Structures are given as C-alpha cells and as structure tokens.
Length: 246
View 1 (cartoon, rainbow, N blue to C red):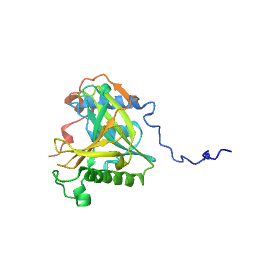
View 2: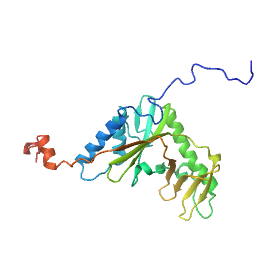
View 3: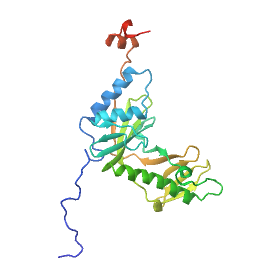
View 4: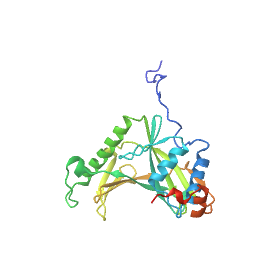
C-alpha cells in the first residue's frame, strides 16, 4: 500500500447548501423576471435598491428575508445565508469586474488606532481593516454553515440584469500589500498578481471589495412593461373615500 494515500471518508460534507454555487433553481430566472416586470409597472422610475434586491432574491429562492445590522446574512435559507448587493452598469452582460461596498471597518473604533495618513503605516492599518472583516465573517459562520454574496448588476432601465454568487470568505492578510493612493484612500493589492482587491476610505471607514464577474453568471433580459397609472391601481384595489378617515 502507498503511504501517501488519503483515506476515503463518509462524513466529509455533512451539511450541503440548498444549491451549488451559481446554479440557481430552474425557475429562478422566471421568478426574477416577474419581479422586475412588476417593479417597473408599479413605479414611476426604474429604481431597485439594496433592500429591494434582498426581498426579491429571498422570494425567488423561497428563503426568509432577515435584514441585519451587519449586512452579511440578510437572506436565510436553512443552513445558508446571503448578503445581497446591487451594482449599476450601462451594459451588465459586458461587466467584468464590480466594486462592492461591504460595510464600515473602522480601526479607530475597533482598536483605538488613530489615523494620520502622512505617518500611518499602510501595511499595519490594512491588516487591521481586514481583521475587522474577518471577525465579522467568523461570527456569522458560527450561525450559518454556508455564507455567500449574491450580486445583481443592473442596467439603468432594469431591462437587463446579471446575477452571480461567490462564497463570502475570510482573507489572509499575508497575501496582500497595502498603500495609500493619490486620493488618500487605502488600497489592498494581491502580492501574487498585483491586482487591486480592496479599497478603504478614511472618511466614513467604507470598505469595498473588488470582485471578478464569473463567466457562468446568469444574464436576464426583460421586455419593459407599460407603467400602471395611479387611477388604474386605485380602481383595481377598490379604493373609495371611505378608506380615508380625517
């Protein structure tokens, strides 16, 4: 027998996610298309913000919407939790990279570390920023076995959207280098390929993750519906003056 063989185990993955990464349920595209058509028909402007996407996504996968202060587990289904993000793009299907606002990480609040951009070591400060992120992920993973981020890239008129997921993970600070840019933002780069992965802004402590759009993303295009007039809606619900008490 070879000494370097690994044993075959029956309990390697006891808890499976509701569906594999980026393999949405068969009816997901049609449910999402229906939600977009309804939204466009009932709103004056094609607005779809973060909370809208959380609610819509939860409906499309039959999950529970549970908005949280942390923003990492706003949608829950069994052992899975999602953070839902939206990004605008002129042509979503051609977008190759997105920047996702991922919370406020303040080393000043969390560690009592004072910031002076002219003298503060960017490497030290960047590690603190990542440490805050990693602690949040660890706390959520104690509750949910699987944690993902689901992204909606939306066109300005909402007639084309792209949807994809990625696993929400901790980051090894040793794999990244940090530097201040000309706008005095802190930028984190991969030591391996020199690509930018993070941006941290001193004003507001906003932490942004730069994420590649996978080739297997779901692309949906819909026909724009005619907007419902206010009178049509009121008539449909049977509105009368007796609905209002003065």
